[in-house]
Length: 168
Image (cartoon, rainbow, N blue to C red; front, side, top):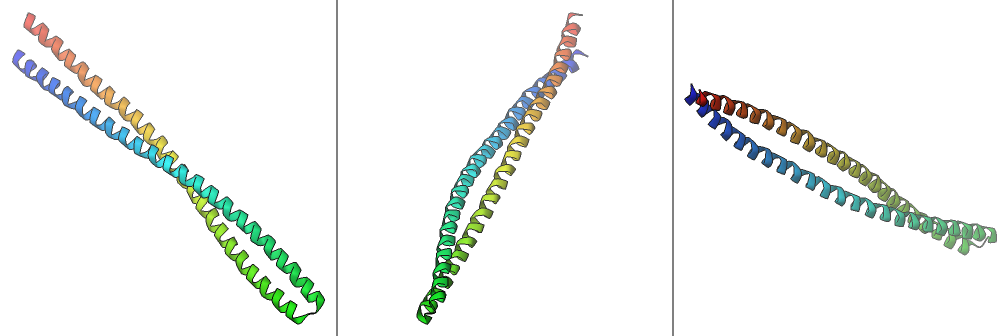
Protein backbone atom coordinates (compact mmCIF):
# COMPACT_ATOMS: atom_id res chain seq x y z
CA UNK A 1 0.00 0.00 0.00
CA UNK A 2 1.47 3.32 -1.14
CA UNK A 3 -0.09 5.29 1.70
CA UNK A 4 1.55 3.08 4.33
CA UNK A 5 4.90 3.35 2.54
CA UNK A 6 4.54 7.12 2.40
CA UNK A 7 3.75 7.39 6.12
CA UNK A 8 6.60 5.02 6.95
CA UNK A 9 8.96 7.17 4.85
CA UNK A 10 7.85 10.27 6.75
CA UNK A 11 8.41 8.45 10.05
CA UNK A 12 11.88 7.40 8.94
CA UNK A 13 12.65 10.98 7.90
CA UNK A 14 11.51 12.28 11.31
CA UNK A 15 13.50 9.54 13.01
CA UNK A 16 16.59 10.52 11.02
CA UNK A 17 16.22 14.18 11.96
CA UNK A 18 15.69 13.32 15.64
CA UNK A 19 18.58 10.88 15.58
CA UNK A 20 20.87 13.51 14.03
CA UNK A 21 19.90 15.95 16.79
CA UNK A 22 20.56 13.36 19.50
CA UNK A 23 23.88 12.41 17.93
CA UNK A 24 24.98 16.04 17.76
CA UNK A 25 23.89 16.64 21.35
CA UNK A 26 25.69 13.56 22.70
CA UNK A 27 28.87 14.27 20.76
CA UNK A 28 28.81 17.85 22.07
CA UNK A 29 28.43 16.49 25.64
CA UNK A 30 31.41 14.20 25.08
CA UNK A 31 33.45 17.08 23.68
CA UNK A 32 32.59 19.15 26.76
CA UNK A 33 33.63 16.26 28.98
CA UNK A 34 36.95 15.97 27.13
CA UNK A 35 37.53 19.72 27.53
CA UNK A 36 36.90 19.46 31.28
CA UNK A 37 39.31 16.55 31.54
CA UNK A 38 41.95 18.51 29.59
CA UNK A 39 41.47 21.46 31.98
CA UNK A 40 41.87 19.09 34.92
CA UNK A 41 45.03 17.70 33.35
CA UNK A 42 46.53 21.18 32.98
CA UNK A 43 45.57 22.02 36.55
CA UNK A 44 47.03 18.76 37.85
CA UNK A 45 50.25 19.31 35.92
CA UNK A 46 50.53 22.80 37.42
CA UNK A 47 49.96 21.36 40.90
CA UNK A 48 52.67 18.79 40.19
CA UNK A 49 55.14 21.48 39.14
CA UNK A 50 54.39 23.43 42.31
CA UNK A 51 54.80 20.26 44.41
CA UNK A 52 58.15 19.54 42.75
CA UNK A 53 59.40 23.06 43.47
CA UNK A 54 58.16 22.90 47.06
CA UNK A 55 59.82 19.51 47.57
CA UNK A 56 63.15 20.89 46.28
CA UNK A 57 62.84 23.85 48.63
CA UNK A 58 62.13 21.54 51.58
CA UNK A 59 65.08 19.36 50.58
CA UNK A 60 67.40 22.38 50.47
CA UNK A 61 66.21 23.38 53.95
CA UNK A 62 66.73 19.80 55.16
CA UNK A 63 70.31 19.84 53.86
CA UNK A 64 70.90 23.18 55.56
CA UNK A 65 69.51 21.88 58.87
CA UNK A 66 71.59 18.72 58.53
CA UNK A 67 74.74 20.84 58.08
CA UNK A 68 73.77 22.99 61.07
CA UNK A 69 73.25 19.85 63.18
CA UNK A 70 76.63 18.48 62.10
CA UNK A 71 78.22 21.82 63.05
CA UNK A 72 76.45 21.75 66.43
CA UNK A 73 77.66 18.19 67.07
CA UNK A 74 81.24 19.15 66.24
CA UNK A 75 80.98 22.13 68.64
CA UNK A 76 79.57 19.82 71.30
CA UNK A 77 82.49 17.44 70.76
CA UNK A 78 84.91 20.36 71.12
CA UNK A 79 83.12 21.50 74.30
CA UNK A 80 83.31 17.99 75.76
CA UNK A 81 87.01 17.87 74.89
CA UNK A 82 87.52 21.18 76.70
CA UNK A 83 85.88 19.72 79.85
CA UNK A 84 84.26 23.13 80.46
CA UNK A 85 80.84 22.40 82.08
CA UNK A 86 79.29 25.67 80.84
CA UNK A 87 80.52 25.12 77.29
CA UNK A 88 79.25 21.50 77.39
CA UNK A 89 75.82 22.60 78.65
CA UNK A 90 75.54 25.35 76.02
CA UNK A 91 76.71 23.03 73.22
CA UNK A 92 74.34 20.24 74.33
CA UNK A 93 71.41 22.70 74.37
CA UNK A 94 72.46 23.92 70.92
CA UNK A 95 72.57 20.31 69.64
CA UNK A 96 69.08 19.71 71.04
CA UNK A 97 67.80 22.84 69.28
CA UNK A 98 69.44 21.89 65.97
CA UNK A 99 68.21 18.28 66.29
CA UNK A 100 64.66 19.57 66.72
CA UNK A 101 65.04 21.89 63.70
CA UNK A 102 66.45 19.00 61.66
CA UNK A 103 63.55 16.73 62.62
CA UNK A 104 61.02 19.41 61.70
CA UNK A 105 62.77 19.96 58.36
CA UNK A 106 62.85 16.20 57.75
CA UNK A 107 59.10 15.91 58.44
CA UNK A 108 58.35 18.88 56.17
CA UNK A 109 60.46 17.35 53.42
CA UNK A 110 58.72 13.97 53.78
CA UNK A 111 55.31 15.68 53.58
CA UNK A 112 56.41 17.59 50.47
CA UNK A 113 57.71 14.37 48.92
CA UNK A 114 54.42 12.53 49.63
CA UNK A 115 52.50 15.45 48.15
CA UNK A 116 54.63 15.36 44.99
CA UNK A 117 54.08 11.62 44.67
CA UNK A 118 50.33 12.11 45.09
CA UNK A 119 50.37 14.82 42.42
CA UNK A 120 52.21 12.47 40.05
CA UNK A 121 49.52 9.85 40.66
CA UNK A 122 46.82 12.46 40.07
CA UNK A 123 48.37 13.46 36.74
CA UNK A 124 48.55 9.80 35.68
CA UNK A 125 44.90 9.22 36.62
CA UNK A 126 43.79 12.28 34.65
CA UNK A 127 45.92 11.21 31.66
CA UNK A 128 44.20 7.81 31.72
CA UNK A 129 40.79 9.51 31.98
CA UNK A 130 41.69 11.72 29.03
CA UNK A 131 42.72 8.71 26.96
CA UNK A 132 39.50 6.85 27.87
CA UNK A 133 37.36 9.91 27.08
CA UNK A 134 39.00 10.22 23.65
CA UNK A 135 38.39 6.53 23.00
CA UNK A 136 34.76 6.87 24.11
CA UNK A 137 34.29 9.88 21.87
CA UNK A 138 35.72 8.12 18.81
CA UNK A 139 33.79 4.90 19.44
CA UNK A 140 30.57 6.81 20.07
CA UNK A 141 31.03 8.96 16.98
CA UNK A 142 31.68 5.88 14.89
CA UNK A 143 28.69 3.98 16.31
CA UNK A 144 26.38 6.98 16.01
CA UNK A 145 27.31 7.45 12.38
CA UNK A 146 27.00 3.74 11.57
CA UNK A 147 23.51 3.65 13.08
CA UNK A 148 22.54 6.88 11.37
CA UNK A 149 23.81 5.60 8.01
CA UNK A 150 21.95 2.32 8.48
CA UNK A 151 18.66 4.10 9.13
CA UNK A 152 19.38 6.53 6.30
CA UNK A 153 19.95 3.60 3.94
CA UNK A 154 16.62 2.05 4.99
CA UNK A 155 14.98 5.41 4.30
CA UNK A 156 16.50 5.53 0.82
CA UNK A 157 15.30 1.96 0.14
CA UNK A 158 11.83 2.95 1.28
CA UNK A 159 11.92 6.06 -0.93
CA UNK A 160 12.95 3.92 -3.87
CA UNK A 161 10.10 1.48 -3.24
CA UNK A 162 7.67 4.34 -2.91
CA UNK A 163 8.93 5.87 -6.12
CA UNK A 164 8.63 2.52 -7.92
CA UNK A 165 5.12 2.03 -6.51
CA UNK A 166 4.06 5.47 -7.70
CA UNK A 167 5.40 4.75 -11.21
CA UNK A 168 3.40 1.56 -11.48
